[in-house]
Image (cartoon, rainbow, N blue to C red):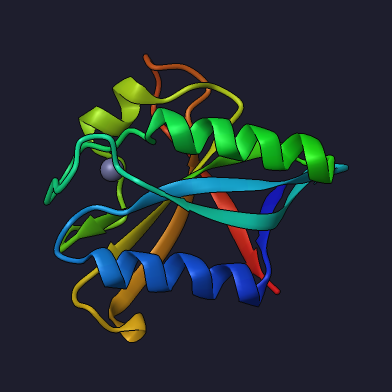
Length: 143
Ligand SMILES: [Zn+2]
């Protein structure tokens, strides 16, 4: 069971996190489920509804959610999950993340320390089967 992120989408996500630094970036991950794995096909950068938040709250703008929904239908993809950055913080879910999580979705967290793509120092994915238990680590395979 793994989340597969192609190189091209990985770069989109990293660039977004670095550009928005020192604020928190967020976006959607669209793709398909193949057996036990989730394959990301489109990374969709979005606006953070909370605006310029240094850390740690994010919510995707409703307009971006609609757009992702439209792209998913058109390309026959599913919304697999979401990514967001933790500027100057480790890629570990915050209490906010746990409380705002939904089961099913993959939550990718990027730790970012600056405005360069190489300043993204850690990327991890988590599943939150239920709010009363600990997040579950999900393996990421970069392709
Ligand atoms: Zn977070």
